Length: 58
Image (cartoon, rainbow, N blue to C red; front, top):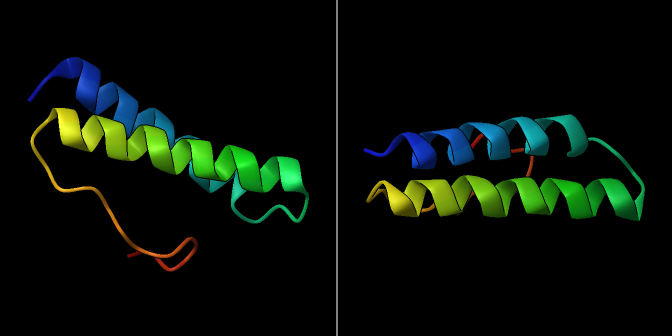
C-alpha cells in the first residue's frame, strides 16, 4: 500500500462527505470529484473502487 494512495483515498472521502449533502451543482460536482479521488487512491493500492451510490455508506 502506498502512502500516496492512502492520502488520496482519505482526501477524497473527506471531500465527498463535506459536499454530498449540498443542493447546488457546485456541491454535487465537488462530491463527485471526491469520489473519483477516493477511488483513484483505492485503485493505486490494488483495491476495488467503491461503486456505492452517494450518501448510502456503500
